[in-house]
Length: 130
Image (tube, rainbow, N blue to C red; front, side):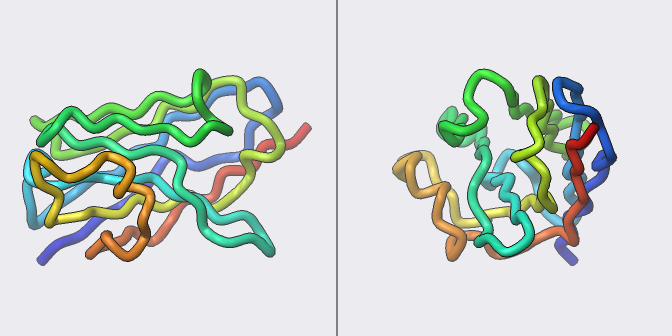
């Protein structure tokens, strides 16, 4: 049974940092792409970052480039999202999704497409406020 569990969300002041985790079970991270998405109240879910060791994928949305870093630890089957210099506009529920059909020649931009993701976690709340 495939399962994704996010953790690490919290209330943090502007300029602060958080590290989110996405623990995967039931499949091997190295055979998939993992995407981090977020959804703020009243807004559509948007991609934040993606990673896959199958083809060296590492993608960031412009809004987080230079502040967020995605990484994966295959020994723990876990993907991390290190978030620095947090802003109030980063407030959202953060989800990780798994694209099990990601291949070595998949175009990297495709990681932004929600419909590619087979599995989703339950989400973790990040609130940036003073």
